[in-house]
Each structure stands twice: as C-alpha cells, then as structure tokens.
Amino acid sequence: MEESNMTYYIHAAKFFLKSNTENGGYLEVTDEGKFGNYYPETDKPEGRIVDKGNQWIAPGLVDTHIHGLLGHDVMDNDWSAIQEMSEGLLKAGVTSWLPTTLTGSFDQLNAVCQTIGAHAGEETGAKIQGIYFEGPYFTTEHKGAQNPKYFKDPSVDEYKAWQASAKGLLKKIAIAPERAGAVDFTEKVTADGTVVALGHSSATFEQAKAAIEAGATVFTHTFNGMSGLNHRQPGMVGAAMYLQQVDDELICDGHHVRPEVAGSLIREKTPEHVALITDCMRAGMMPDGDYVLGEFPVYVKDGMARLKDGDSLAGSILKLDEAIKNVVDWNGVTPEDAVKMASYTAAKSCQVNDKCGSILPGRDADYLVLNPDMTLAETYLNGEQRYQA
Image (tube, rainbow, N blue to C red; front, side, top):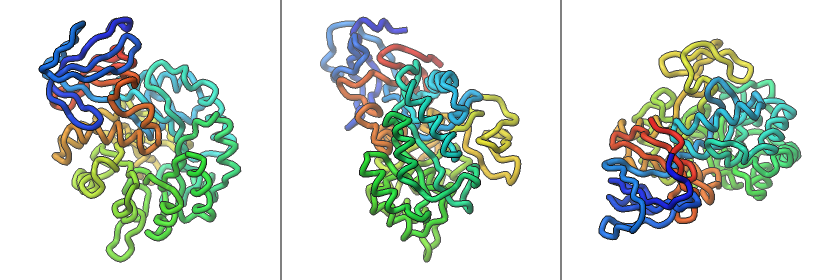
C-alpha cells in the first residue's frame, strides 16, 4: 500500500495521458488521492518519488458492459455480490464499471435498479459509474443468450420507473431499432441524458440510421447479435462501420470477433470510437464447468462460454486487461490506442468520461502500472495500491 496521506510522484518509462503519450517524467499523486501535474524528465520535482523503472502508467480501465464475475451475476440482485465483483475487477485493471443487466421482467430489472440505486458509492473496489440495461427491447432472431419471453417494444414509462428506482444511475439502455416506437423512445431517453445503444437486432441499415439520427450513439458488441454486412444490405454492421460520431463496443477475446475483423473495425472507426468491453458473465475468473446466464444453462471451456442448448456464445469470460493486450498482440493498434479504447473511449461511450477514463489533474488517481508486454503489474485506486500481480 502507498501511504495515502502523503503526496508522491510516479517516475516511469511512459505515461498515457489524455492528449498524448509522454516518455519518462513524473506524475504527481496528491495526499488526497487525486492526480496532480505531469512533469517532464528534465523537471524533477522535490518530494517522494515512486520509481516504476521501465513500466508504463495508464488510466484505470472502464468496463462498461459486464454482467458477472467470480460466480456472481448482476441479475442475482445481491449487493454483497456486486461488492465482490467490484473488488475482483481491480485484478483486471478495471477501476470503474457499469453493472450490466440481462433481459428480464419489469420487476426483476426494477429490483436491480433499487438495489444499486440504494447502495452505489459503498463499493470498495472498482467504482460504479452507472447501470447498463442490455435489453429487454430486443429481437428474437438475434437473441443470443437473452431470454425472448421478456422481449417487447420500448416503453418510456418503464424507463422512467427504472430510472427513478436507480436514483438516476441508469446510464445506458440497449434496444433493437426495428421495434415499434424505437425512434420515439430514443428521442425521449437521450433527451433525458441517457445513452441509447443498438443491439440484438435484425434491423436494416435504414432502421439503425433512423435510431442514430434520433440520438442513439452506441452499437452493442459490434458484429455479435446483429444483422451482418452485405454489399447490397449493409444491415446493423454496415451502420456501425459507416455512421459517424457513433461508438462501437467490441469484444476482443479472439472468439467473438476474429482479430482481422476487429482490426478492420478499429482502422475504419479509429480508437476514438471503438470501446473495448468484456461482456463477461459469472464464470469470469472462475474454473471451467457449468454455469447459468439469466435462466439458461451455460458451459465454459477453452476460453469460451456457450449455451448448452444451441451452442451460441453466452457472454465471455474475458478480462479487460486481457483485451488491451490482445489487440496489441494482434498487431492492430499501438499500446496507447489499446488503453484509450478501454478507458477514455469506453467512458465517453456511456457519458461518464467526466468522472473516469483519463489521467487529468484533480481526477481520482485511479491508475495502472503496465509492463511493456501489456500485462498488468499493479492497480491503484485513489492513489493507493489495491492489486499487485
């Protein structure tokens, strides 16, 4: 543990700052657990220096799409389980997250909102920056591991009830743009400051575009659970690749999307608009075997979670620190761009980048120490070491 009551300066080989990457130098961490200023190598500050040698300093990662971890699922509606997940996430380099629901009944989802709304801020690990509703306004053809018995058309009244229960913490909701009322729902919900994402959908390019023009700004786990790209029918994938000022979630475990395809999307959209996510389910950080996702039996083997019935992928067991290493190992992006997609871009995609995702003076000193091979060495929260590999 670093002494939290004393200002210190990190000396390291690289710093991934918000606007640029610096070689060498010193980053101030104040006695209040906030970032201070960065000083170049030639301007060594007076005070306590913590030397990280050839290692790199990155902002803490932001997992904006995660259902479960360590045998727990957000849908279990158990605050102690969410607290355990928040602690476990520090081992994946995640310092902020959005607990993510699955499709369920109105009452199930409302209960999750009430629980997180009542307790958010009490978690002692990765910080809850909001709730992400993945569903229930989806399309059966691309249900994935979501339960179609709860699918329905979007309702602004339901959204308002959930948001009230969540005390304003419902930050993002994913819908299928071809559902009746999707455009009107998108206009009203985004006007309220909540992000609308598009996913689990058979929508045409035109239907997706209509929802984007109404205010939707994110595609949910791009390529997975959506109508594909055809040269005459661009579909959801075509919309995700072509439309501007839109952020695309991407699962980079090597199973959900081939590395070449992931690289193509990143090259087309740029790291500014690709948010690395895990879509991790309860088997994350757990041994292979049998699990449940929502109400469906799942088996985990060879780094994949699959439905027992039908064999489709059922979320992932990916950790976000693995995702940033993967995209670099696939020769798709630079280390700083990999970090950016899992911190700044992820936070921006959920409109929580005023709280997390960047190293800036005055922000909570939530940061990582990375090895030059992109493996995680340490995680710091509020300037204090909370995990060491």
